[in-house]
Every structure is written in structure tokens, then in C-alpha cells.
Image (cartoon, rainbow, N blue to C red; front, side, top):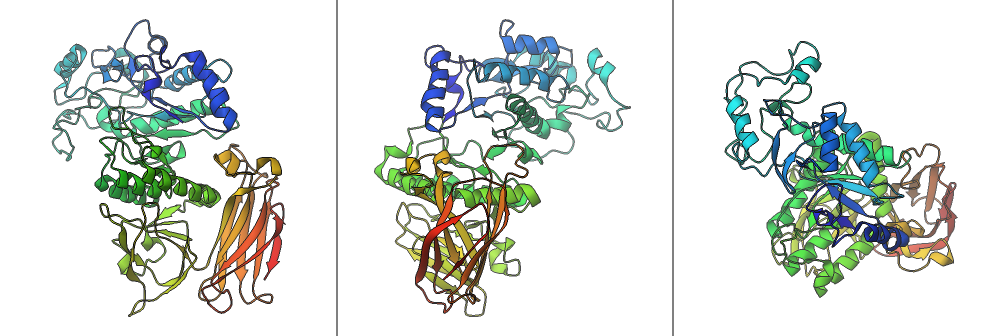
Length: 574
């Protein structure tokens, strides 16, 4: 469950609305209704701190000198959701300590709101001031600073300035209207953000550090969450990012619109962030954040979103209701999509582990695996999840057909298991068209040569846990089915990473399992599982299925049922 700014008292950080979200009732709800059922709770925080003398976070921050200052030494002020605000200077050494104290106090698991993660927004930083004249202090800042030299430092900043300043920007610059303009959306670089002339603690200007604001806020927030739970991996979600932000936070693609165009754009965003920016845990607000979601579009997006690493349905308070259950078509589509996603959680998790270990992206464009095939270079409406799954969403408005490129090789329909041997007329792949794609469907193909470990969401490791898994906690108790999709040579391989899902350090208590299939071994093929087995679990593999005919290249499927533990290697002969 996601808590947007509606939970706050007048949109103040570290507060709860006394009428709609009474603190004691919210604490009880999180503990009993959410945590008691294995659900998680994440709250939002914004960087803008209300400029109000009796507001605790402001008072304590002012005493520590953690906020950005204007050229005259006063607190630099602007506008965000609570009204007139000041902004933390994340570069200042005492800011993380102040921010951590506020988080530890408000989110104390024993006396405060026991959240499972934080969501930081408005951290570009966003300023609702349209220009440099919207507040009296802003007017004074602009009056003092519109000149072609570096803005004067406050005496405090001057005393603390490190080094000789040779790398803190060229002299005689116009920080408001630089000679070489970028093609920014607003007329001025300072419009609706922190003024470019504002000086940081280390005497650099926002002109130089604007793109680092969210990165430094993410770093400080990550550090605070570690202080709160030193042995657990922090969950942090950020709207704005910079190179390196993925070390600290997941990312959603911001305030999109409920439209087919933004539905399509989310695929390009996914490819850009995952494969180009190397940002593994990303996704969009499914069905759009602004505007009125349309039923069929929302159904398509509910299905597409389930194949992205980060997945949630979230809309602005002014938008129309778009919970999945509002429409029968969307409800059915979302139920099916979530069920498939839960089966694949370990496949995603293994891929994310790989991304953290060696940088290999989980989500990949087609050219990542077929760099010699020029037909893959411009494909931006399809994507690979790991090495084994090719996702081909319907992208045209209100359509039930999709044309997509299928590279050369052996493929298997993920849902029907039908085999496709793909070779174009001149070698390579070719574009195919699938028609009659239902609103709860999406064409997904398993790449030949892959082995997929999938959870059986209704088959638990103990009788007390049986039944359809409804949370990720429940999914972790379910047994596995191994799907083998042989390539043209009758071989396949795959991986599975297991740990407890939350420990910061899993050294020695994780399993890295390598699966291999050879259709020429045994009487009709052999599956082998080898690797390291440090994770203790009662979960087992209870079914192994080979798609096609692993020996003769047919179109059927064969399966063996049994019980193979995941605390050591094993072999399955067909």
C-alpha cells in the first residue's frame, strides 16, 4: 500500500492528518491489517520543509543550518505542497544527520509509523514558483544575483569553503541566463525549480549541482533507512535520478498521463533506464497518473506493467478512479497478470541479482542478444526480460492485434507452449502478426535454450500454507515447477538465485543454482541442478516440464513429477 501526501497534516512531512489518518489508528492499521497479512506499507516524503517557526522539522533543521541559503544569507524559500518551504542542502555534512533523526523519530517501529520503505518525490527539485519573483525573499535573491559573476557567499560558507575553489565554476558567469542555453521546457532555467544562483554548503552553485539534488537526497534517505534497520535492505523509490541513483533507490517514470501514447512511451522509458542507464528496478504508474483512464487502455497497461520490474497502479487525487476492480475487463486482466507475475518473481529476482552483481540488465532491447541483426536496432515496443522471455505487447489504440519481430531461433509461446521455429526467407528472423489478442492477454515467447524456474502459486511447501498466494511473502512458500525450452540442438540452461529476500548481507546464506538440460543424455534427456546451496528452505521442485520434444523437435510437452529439494544438487532423467 502506497501512502501519498493525503496522509499528511496540511501536506507537512513527518505528520499525519488528525481527521483522516489519526496517528494511533494508522499505526494500528499498518501493524494489524497490513503487516498482519504479510502486506507492506510505503509512505511519501518531499524535500520541501514548511517555513514555519513552530514546525519541528524546520526548527531543528534551522538550528543545524541544513537548509539552502539565498545570497543575503537568509533561508532560500520557495513553494511546494505545504506552502512556503525551504529545501535541505544535501551537500552540507550535517543534513543527513538531521534527516536521519527525523526519519528515526517519525518512523519508530515501536512508537511511530512502522513503514517498510519510503518514496521520495518532488526532488528534481520541484518548485511551484513559476519565476524568480514569486516570494519577497525570492525577489531579493534575484535583485542581488542577476549579474555576471559568482553570487557572494555567506560568511559561514566562506569559512568552510574547501580548497582554492579552482573547480567550483568559472568566474563572471551569468547563472540565470547563461550564454549557452539548453532547450529546457520553461523560459528560464530557474523556473519551477531551485534558482540556479543559490549556493550550496561547499560554495558550488545550483547551476552546477541541479542534477545531483535527487541523487544526494536518495543517498541521505538510504542512509537513514539503514540506520533504522541496519540488517535489512532499504526500500526507497525516487522520482528524479542521476547516474548512480540506482545504488540507493528504485525509480518510477514520474507523472505520466492516462493515454495510449504514454502507455507506449513507458516501453521506451523501460528500455532506456534498464539497458542504457543501467537502472534495474524501474517501471511506470500503470494506467497513468493524470487524466481519465480508459477501460481498454487500462487493461492493456495492467498486463504490460506486470512484465516490468517495478509495478503499481497510482493516480493523482484529481484523476478519475482507476483501481483495477472498477471495470470487469481490467479486473480480469489484472488478476491474470498478477498471477503470472507472482509465478515469475524468482526469475525477476534472479535477474535483478545478476544486475547488482555484474551490471547485466534485467530488461533488454532485442539488439542486446542479436547485435548482428540490424532488424533489431529500431525495435522500441518489445523487450526481453532476462535471456529467456520476449515480451510483445499490443501497442495500437483499442487493437486486438500486434505485429512484432521474432529473431531467428526456436521459440515457445509462454502460455500455450506451442513451438515456433523462426527463420526468415533470407536467414534471420521476421515480423509476425498475432490477431485476436484478448484484453487480458499479451504475446510472450520463451527463447529456445532457456530454463525457467516458476513458482506454483497454489502448491505450498507445507499444508498450512496451501491456497492461492496473494502476497510476495506467501509466494516464497510455494514450490517450483521447472520449464525447459530446448534450443535447436536439444539443450537449455537457466539460473535461480535464492535468499531470505531482505537481509543486507546474505553471504553464505544464499543459493546460486545453475540448471542444464541435454536432450541427448539419459533415455530421453536429463536435467541437472548444480551450484552453491546456502539458503535453507523447505521449498522443493515438484514438477519438471520439457516443451516441444527435447529429442526430436516435436511440438508436444513432457513432464515428470516428484520432489527435489533445493538444499543440494539433483538430477532428473526423462
